[in-house]
Image (tube, rainbow, N blue to C red; front, side, top):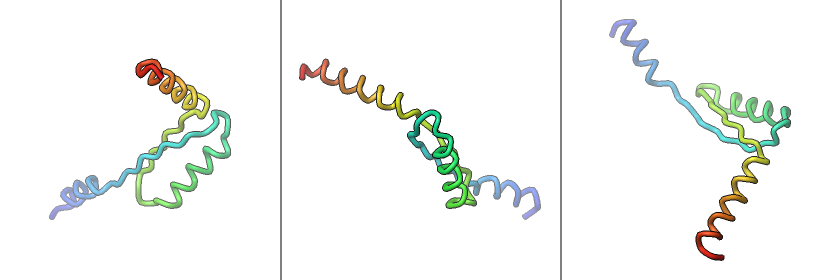
Length: 74
């Protein structure tokens, strides 16, 4: 194998982990702690962390429950 083939093989060996965390919008300490934990726990993987605001998630859940109840007359 040539050096170019080795490089191409290495590209396809990248691991990725997607993490979704629910946090309070202004809780920077929790956000940084989560980032640090996953960087230390999975040093050989690309970790993509999506943070969701806790208040918005709770609102979405309430709206979903209300819509479900409206559709099913409960």
